Figure (cartoon, rainbow, N blue to C red):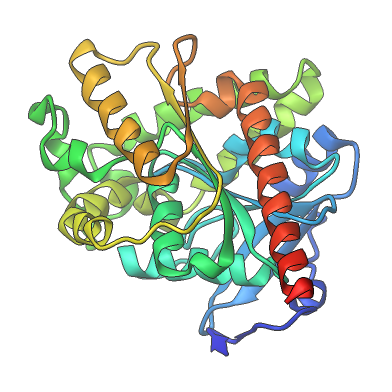
Length: 338
């Protein structure tokens, strides 16, 4: 089977090219943080390149999916924690970071995520998704359950909370796509996007290390995700793309059949407006009921739990990874017995 030039066979991951990354700020920063080799890898998606950072080895690959408008570098602390005994992958969606731009749509982002998980084989992977990335991870699981060994959902988005938001005015201007005839930097929302991103970069660096030199490298790596017009436009347009896809997402959830895999969800409450807390927790409890998973409410973290409490997120990833591996071994033993 092929998908955008990707062959699916047992040694595909080993044959994927390693990109020359001597001037790649994310590779440099993550390598310094880990004190070990970090590779920049890529696959061809119909003439464009989808790229990711990769490190470590282990029987189950861990794939990190960032939230809307967030760089893959937000996973720095979790990436470093898990790379000691797992194969870890943090990829850039099309138009973000090191990946080439592509027309923005739900199905295109979903197909790219599935291509990454295929490339991570052999065997299914554990998907770790934050916010919009958590919802994308669920969509990938419903579409290709054979590729997913487990899920860790970090304050994941839920379409119901956008279809019937507790505070409709909060969406406001963010529901509108940018004007493609105007540079993204001239969009009136761009100053807020850039300011919020810069603050996030600082938080990521502080949460990952106390070393001032590595902190500076991580800040620069985050900044590299918004240097071009395409990158900034994706940061602005991902949210309206999501809003325009809510009906499709809701329909897919209604028709979803959950595989028997370990699922852990973490929900942040610090700083969340009170009118959101109850509906957010209710939505995640419904998800956990459907998956027989684990729900951890995190009162001492805001939305970026993996930045503020990477220890807690890493603990849940390890738990899901162990259970996924045990499930795989049981299946293998059953096949041998048969």
